Image (cartoon, rainbow, N blue to C red; front, side):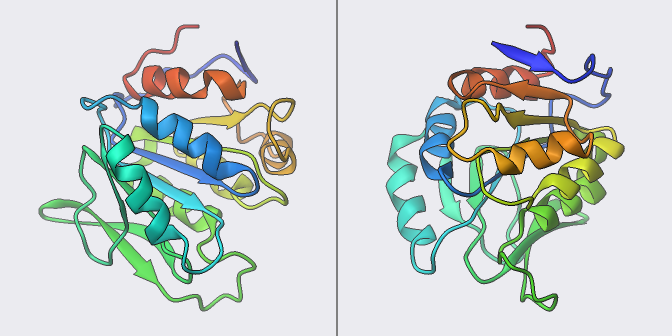
Length: 208
């Protein structure tokens, strides 16, 4: 079951050109469930910003890769951001995007802001808003604090479709609640429904 905070806008440009997902406390299990459900013909590349301790992202990506239809890897600076792949932000750098004549690419930046979280979900989302605009799909999952709320609002203001994990079913509710408070959310989705809803929305299906 899903509920929308307002009727979904007729967001132009879908199917999505990028899916960006942010999560913190309780996130790895939800992210894994989502990634394992994504089909081989999923229309967009996926970026994951998961708050994790140093040394775990590469191992996590290596464990997930054989379990998923899409190729899962730790993001590298300057690499192409292309369909069929999932890019997980490394601990200690901020993941952003840029575009050259060949298409979108990943950019890894050292922290110069004193951010509490490195990588920061807000930075990933805001960069996706700037590079992909209305062709992005932003997803904010379980977590403590407010990281991702402002970035999700930036996405929505650029015409992107935005959704959050339902606080009532999330392990930690404060990140999705913060986004809802800011008016950043088009749709609220129960945890069990996230994989199929993300697949439908990324393919441009806004019904039910």
